[in-house]
Length: 327
Image (cartoon, rainbow, N blue to C red):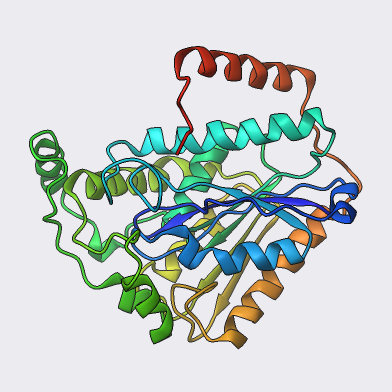
């Protein structure tokens, strides 16, 4: 079984930036899945997603991903997200280009997204852009709604919007220490704090506004439209994203194939910041869910129309943005 796993994630945004090549035996099985990552606030993906990629690869899935603009080793001012819609478009451009290449090689069967924390919102936005394109999604502690007691007044939102046009990169947004709140193990906290590619300052003004804007959009316009199969895994003691948000998504989604797993006592960073036994438990559930939906003999090859659309898009991008995607 071959899978593609698209990785996005963050509490403020990142994606894994490596490709794990599968052995020839795996490639011959002709399966595909996409999984996305989770991370702490503005972390570099190699810190939090390496273990995820390795576990998924050992289970037969190919992993593709990229650091978001302004994160990890990608271009851009560190920790700065000027336009989250453009960030989602970057992900869509890259992932569909990989699908197109694999389709031409007859390797595409299943395409799954896996989004962690804010990456859960990115995954849902990608699903909205192409509702029939993805075979399913794994959402790890998704950040797709602002808790009612944390919701800013509309006046505050308007003021924030106005300020972003004046000082968009200003590092003034007060926040608690997300690293301490998200990662249970001190070893992982120290690793993140010692990595120069991890942004550890206060959130920039425009970045904070973009996260707020997209969270409100997902809550108001997307939750009830989610129609693809999905698995949600969430720590019961998560202090970064409220488990009740995952319960709301589970209840609201139109999907007929949906699963919610809550882990009592676990924190936010389920796939990298917990004890080895806890991480193993979470991945057992994730991989079992993926395997069940990848072993189905029914393929999900792109139609001729979809393939032509992707090829036309690729030619357009090459002509107008020759350096686009070189992160």
